[in-house]
Each structure stands twice: as C-alpha cells, then as structure tokens.
Amino acid sequence: MATYSHLRSSAAAASLLAAALLAAHARPAAAQQLQSTCGGPRTLLAATTPAALAAVQTLGHLPASRPAYGWPVKPFDRQHPVRAFLNDPRIGRNGVISFHFGIDVAAPDGTPVYAVEGGTVFFDSTEAIAVKVAPQHEFGYWHVEPAVKPHQIVRQHDLLGYVGRGWGHVHFAERVGSRYLNPLRPGGLGPYTDPLAPDVAEISLLHGRSGVQILANAYDTTWPPVPGPWAHEPVAPALIQWRVTRAGGRRGSWRTAVDFRGEMLDRRLFNTIYAAPTAQNHKGKAGLYCFYLAHAWKPADGSYRIEVAATDTRANRTVARVDVTVVDGQVQR
Ligand SMILES: [Zn+2]
Image (cartoon, rainbow, N blue to C red; front, side):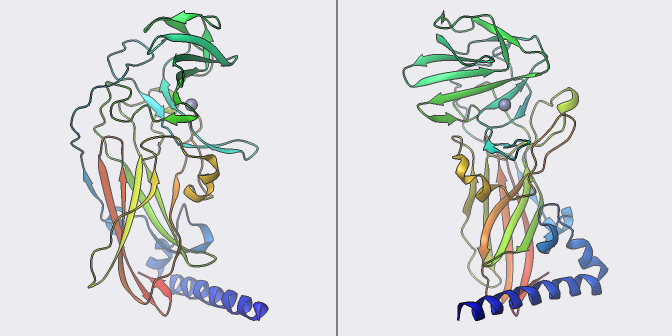
C-alpha cells in the first residue's frame, strides 16, 4: 500500500512538472516566466518582471522614538553606512549556516571604535571586544584591534580600539542574556532613518514534496550608501508577510513568514526561512535572498492572487503580487 501511494504521488508530481514544461515549450513567453533565480528546475511559475509583480511601495510613518545609544564610530550622533543587517544569511565555505548576529557598520580600516555605553571590558575572542553594561546586557565590537584590556572599566564614548586591517567594518552586536537584539529596532541604535523601502524581485511557485512551495526573492537597500567594494549589496528585509486571496472570495489575512525586527533567530530555523539558492554577500559580489513563504501550499482549483509584503524596521513597505490559476491541480498563469 505504501509503495502504491508512493508511486501514485511521484507519478502525479511528474505529470505536474511535465505539464509545466510542456506549457513553457509551447509558449515562449511562459518559458521566460519559468526562469527563476530562487526556484531552479522545480519552478512551476515565476513572476520576475516589475509588470508581473505589480509592486506598490509605501514609506513608513513611525512615531519618532528616542534612540537608547549612539553609533560606535564618530560622529556618534550621525548615521553611518551599514552593510549587513541582523539575520542576514551567513553560509560558510564548509556549508555552516547561521543568521548574522549583529549589524556591520562600514568604516575604513583603522577607524577608532568607541563604547556606545560604559561598562566592563572582556574579550569574546582576540578580535572581539565586549562591554558588559549590566549583568545580562552587553555590547560586542568585532574585528577591532583592541586599545583596552580585560576587566578595564570604560565610560560611554571611551576608545575601545581600531577597525582591524582588511575588515572595513565593525560588527556591532547587542546581547541581553542569550538573545541578540536587533540594534536597528526603533528605540535601539540611533539616530537611524531609512528613506528606502525593501524590494520584492521575484515570486516563485515550485513543485514541492507535499504541495506547492512559494518563494520570494526579497531584499532591502541600506541608507546611506555603502562606499567601496561592498556597495550596492542587498540586506534582509525585517519582515516578510504574504496572503492568498481566492478570486471572488474574502481577502486573505496576512501571514508572517519572516520576522527579523526584534532579535536573532535560532539557527535551526535557517533552512525553513532561507531556501537553498540563498547566497550571502561577498566583497564585490551581491548575495541572493530566497525566502520560503509556504512549504506546502495545497490549493483547490480556482484563481488566486498571491501578495508578498516586505517591510523594514522603519515600516517602509513594498507589496508585490502575482495572479495564478490552478486547473486540475496544476498551477498556471
Ligand atoms: Zn558582521
């Protein structure tokens, strides 16, 4: 029985895929739609052009919130370029995956780095200075050539060290207990403003093992622009939501696929949030951020509108959408 159902489901899978490929073959336009940077050969439908995604951007209007602390480089009260966000994908050469546990403040090698709050210095490693500001609260400054010693007491804005050679940034992290907080949350590091909404570059539907997978290629753009070889590289949006509305039915409710606004996520969630083609940024080479929205969508036949909303920490938001039809269990445009 188990064998039979296995055969049946893989036959159904094969016919679904074959139909999609056939449709692509018959209509050159469809073939183009099937190209997906996130989906690969399992793609049933990919909306990648701005027209197909019909995106709408709105700029956020959050009430002004007072920052808890300033920047770790001078001037403390002016915004600096940030080249990586909390929870950006980190994929090591050996395949080790993790969420980025802080933000990367771009600064030339040798830039002096200062304590955002006073406390006691200790070292997480030879290149990571931590300042404990309260029993369960510390700030981490990575890739810094230290000018302080362990157990040294520092005051706010005291010199900690200098950005190490070849690093071009200070990795800045805030930890409360075992939780890494998002320094760019409203009421965290500041001043911080963000005039740019994230982008949704692609919505893809894929053939999955137990239903249709829905992926979004979405990213945010940092402000002010990062100079040098790390310029124009994407970072993760803070929040990704999606909803499905059936034609003629009630508007679907938003579901949250990704929420990076508050704190770093458990690394065990990495492969449920980032799909396999995801790549992290490298010097001079932009990464690719493919987010899972649904792992197994099982639509009944009918027409649907799929909307994807990508939002940043300042509530700037882009909503993109694609309309699809499901006929005999097959996803079509
Ligand atoms: Zn970093």
